[in-house]
Amino acid sequence: MTIFTAMAKSPIKYLLALTLSAGSTLALAAVPPAAGSSAHGSTAATPSATVNLPGTPLNQVVAIANNDPILQSSLDAELVQVRNRLQSQNTPLPSPDELRHQVLEHLITQNLELQAAKSKGIQVTADDVNRALSSIASRNNITLAQLPQALTAQGQSYNAFRHTIRNQLILRQLEQQAVAINIAITPAEIDNYLKSQAGNRNARMQYHLAQILIAFPSNATAKQAQQTLVKARQIEAKIRSGTNFSAMAIAQSAGPQALKGGDLGWMSGSELPTLFATIVPQLKVGKLSAPIAGPGGYHLVKLIAEHAPKSQSFTTEYQIRHILLKPNPVRNLQQSRALAEKLHQEIDSGKLTFDNAAKQYSDDPNSAGNGGDLGWLTLDSLPHSFATVVPRLKLNTVSQPVDTRYGWDLVEVTGTRKANKSENKRRHEAYQVLFQRKLRDQLAQFKRSLRDQAYIRILDPADAGGGSDTATQ
Image 1 (cartoon, one colour):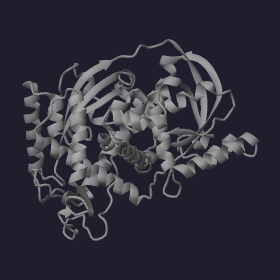
Image 2 (spheres, one colour):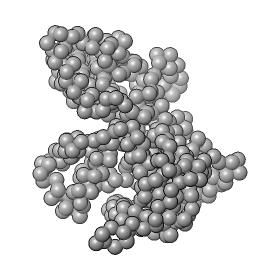
Image 3 (spheres, rainbow, N blue to C red):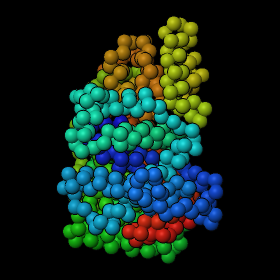
Image 4 (cartoon, rainbow, N blue to C red):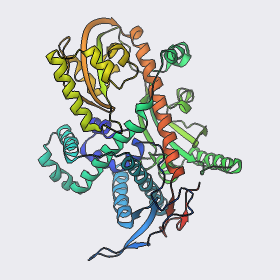
């Protein structure tokens, strides 16, 4: 879940835990170790085990991710956040050592992701952070000026929260540049999906899921893979015997949602990862799957709840075209917005047609060649940022730049009609099914690569693996 999904649905109290969600935002391509280090762990620099800042106590280094140290103070602060959040949700806590290990793993992964973002030149300005904070404040019916006081009242540091939001914005851009920008869905893929049983039955079902991932070691041998399966079956047996699923996920899962009890939230059939697509619809509410084999390890999936949305006979459809401007290595998010504003002015003045602008500038490979045409769509099939703009647009009027999870968009509505919802939505829903599956699969693949290629050394004496290299190549 990106930060903006969380912001749209959650009060401040939940947002304060967003330091835990960075790992669930991205799964990204690996980057080589910094100069002087080695992905093989053979020539990596080993910094001192402590950092002595003037006027402060020694701050122990508890882990190294490539050449970046992770400090005891960071680990301690994160542990406090995690404990407070889990206790406020009445979630059983694992042992102190297990919780400490999982939090440290989260910090390592987040550090690697931020390194990948830095290597791509991704930057976030103070204005970007202020806009995100203003959005959070607005959704909680307070002003930006009141936000620090609201956070302090809940025992949270405004500066720390601001830093968390900054990291979330960086990771959002990384997701766009490393994964989403490369995903394309062909008409043939949509046709094939619509012919499948899944295309007809499960696209609109809503599932609330949780998972535990028992990960393979890097470059796992057949024996190690079998040992991973044995461990997954042991955990399955404990849960079926009454052990709390959330507590087990916090203690044992290698998934990005581990510190949230493995909770994946609600997702539709269109968002189910490929591994789960045929298994989840067969689960009964409250039940647990057997271990599911995947590229990264074995997954245990629990169906917490499900919901079948009511089908409406008729709905309003909008004929929409758009120009998408994604950030890329030579144009960051701010420059993409500036280009969107420039194109809006040129289209509005008649200097440039929407059709030509889309063909020349749009980064959506599926619509650019057709002048940005997305076809006939319903509001509930649109991203939230689109759905709030489209109904207010006059016909044949171009919107101001719209901030979406992929970049900046210019949107135009060229027609409206009443239509049979169940028939006309199928093709767009198929597109969403395929896109979300590819996105989730590729995020997971990139995240595994990021860990596999990194030099990671655990120095925390309290960690069970302390003092050892935990990644090999």
